[in-house]
Length: 442
Ligand SMILES: Cc1cc2nc3c(=O)[nH]c(=O)nc-3n(C[C@H](O)[C@H](O)[C@H](O)COP(=O)(O)OP(=O)(O)OC[C@H]3O[C@@H](n4cnc5c(N)ncnc54)[C@H](O)[C@@H]3O)c2cc1C
Image (spheres, rainbow, N blue to C red):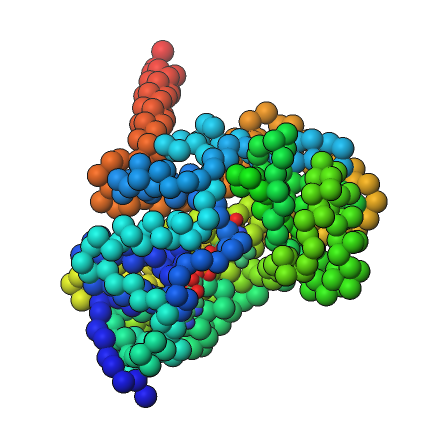
């Protein structure tokens, strides 16, 4: 039984990228919003630290990009790797139609602290740390808020709309009884750090060899390293021992040399159980799920944060006005699902395809040889820019609806559409004249 009741217009469960962004945007639009986060701070390692060009573009539209870029970060402009003995470049971001032509690498807690500090400038924003939603409040089939555990005991937060942004293990979606569709995933990932040396590569690097895929993300003076392993095989890896683990790293990325000795304890290695799933329906009256709570993403292509933020923007664009006027309908919630389902499906499809590719790597424990289709694809002129666009900007990117600064990509798109329409019109006129001239009686 709750000993207190709080009231708000929108209760956001979860202070990850989706929840904090949604809280910020709604507060900016004058909606009373309470964001609940179960932890006492945002400090968690290896949660995904990539801020993509599309998210940076949103910051530009919001007029906070300059401040954001003052927060320490690294800028990644290309990604590639070595497949066996074949070096390749997979993506180059320098010609993206966005203001920032790079992926910013920033610890996620810095990103969330920045965004929540900006949100706190609006009086209608309330962030409640150490508040864990444990149940939904339901009245006649409509969700009216949540019950949360807080440092002062259980509390009821009553709201016109509750948004579940509580990630892949979402309690909100479980309490709502939403149906989850799982897409089998053959991989898990192990994350750890290794010191960088001055002559190490500057850009993101995937090393494919000896049945392993090792991802090296340069982070200032260290690499964030991800070793892709077969699903549920971490115990097996541990049983083979740390010596064998270090040998694996050395074989996959020989330039690490004796730096692999830095891994002295399994406590330094964090397991990410990779999932891909999504809800059949993201909403019911009074409740919407977005971000990983609606569709858990694999870390492949590092796009989960991006999608979560895009969901938040679409939600704020469509619901800020109706929330202010107290007239949010279930049809509006369904519109958000319809809008965001397509980018989610496409991205998850690409991730499933990438997982299939990774499975073939596991099958060959010897020296790897890049297959010819792979070599052909990465040699197509301009392919690196196309891949960069898919990863850096994504499918159907969202924009801040009331953006004071018009986004660069929209301006370019409108120009292209205008030129295309002009050419089509001119073509139609010429064709019409030709046809008429043929029809003219001799
Ligand atoms: C190890 C790892 C590496 C990844 N690497 C990348 C990457 O490099 N780039 C990338 O784009 N994506 C990456 N991803 C995916 C990415 O982290 C997610 O897709 C993204 O964070 C989803 O954002 P979200 O806000 O929906 O959920 P989350 O980031 O999961 O945030 C959910 C929040 O809700 C809080 N919460 C949970 N339950 C409750 C509750 N009951 N009450 C209150 N609060 C609650 C949690 O504490 C958390 O803060 C990675 C994921 C993992 C696990």
